[in-house]
Image (cartoon, rainbow, N blue to C red; front, side, top):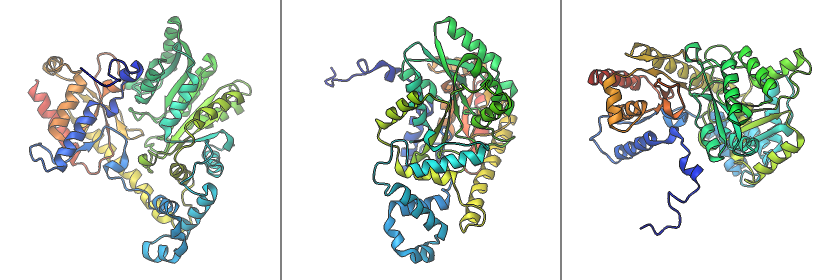
Length: 482
């Protein structure tokens, strides 16, 4: 008999029932394998674990950007500035590294103290200037909120938007499970809208309209729409017309638009168009029509070529929110005092990297493009491998850090999964992990159309040897259950 006051049966049910597949059963089992390998276990049929389940670049060998880490090192220990010549002569620091560290220290005073709850004003000014350069339209620092990664911003906005259990939020399927898990915790409704796999995981507004109509018939108050661009887990990248279609729908249905744009630099096909830019263009082209759209757009230091997941830095920008509501958003984030100040500084470095002609630019440019080209090469290698695998179909890699292939499994494999009490894509993914040490996420963790099976894999791990592990496993798996 349990002696603890808390048991699985008496904790908050929303917490117990929420699901987050990216760090679920497969991830925990992969971590157990990693620990066994570290302790010298030779019984496993592989000698390393590939954590392809999560967009965690530096865990998989992506090198930090030198300029960023050099500046951060000074911020962590400002006494280094007492001997600039040693920094330059012994450690290769350039003058712009030292100058930036001084500027940031002036803006935050010290990283060991709380900042303004919304983020240090000087750093928010830098983010606003970045958005202006990116989009060609003004941005105001008072509408910028620095956050502990984009996830923190999502949590804030959904908590404010979801009034009660009748509130609904449109979420793309497949989706990043942060959204469904957070809505489940708040006992609000996830209103799914399905992306079109056959059209490069495109966003079809007619499908979204049908989802809205169905939700309304069920008494759900649909208030917002989430758009992940570029997509996670699909990697799809929205065109300017796609963005316009979503904004048109937002006008029709009075929807708050939550634009998750954390992969905006991870675009391989076409160019990234932010929702803020497209909204401003449409407001200019058709005065009055789009003036009442409330838009929140999110960005993060965790993705792109920065890949600094552990530093937990990000921001969101509010567009056209009522001042009274914006004040409540500020109050909500104030409860947590402030985001990590070192993370805030990293956001500033991301949005204001070395410029051409500055001492650190050449190395920064080399590192940045080296990472970007490496990601594209590995995405292509993985895509080419999937195309050759029996029963596997995959859309062209357009962006983000993931591929989300469809898998068609033999009937015997489906029966084996049922006997094991597992969903077929979970059964396949667990078998892949057991045989190869490669951890992916079953498609059911993101949502998928009835009767289809998928898995999501990153293409962050270096080299192509692990890709060959997948193809070898898949051929053996298909032969086993043929």
